[in-house]
Length: 88
Image 1 (cartoon, rainbow, N blue to C red):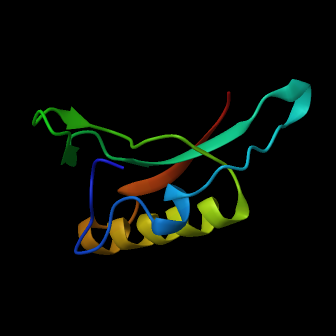
Image 2: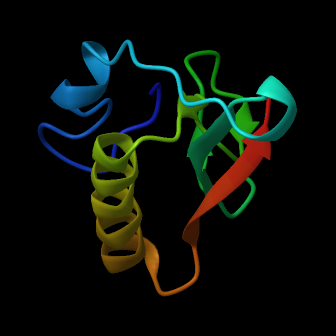
């Protein structure tokens, strides 16, 4: 992920090597990402953003992104970070 929430944060190490795909109904894959209040974080071009990179929704990924959401809410306030889901 481009955005970080503290030392050692960013893309969790278990996501770097993630290569399993989880297919949902109709062969579509469920994906998740960390999202946040618009403008809370910026990308490398210093433009405001409201979400990170999409990852396959696996138990390991969900666990890691839940930790990032918890840390983001701890640092910036309750409800500022959450998980988004989509079919891809």
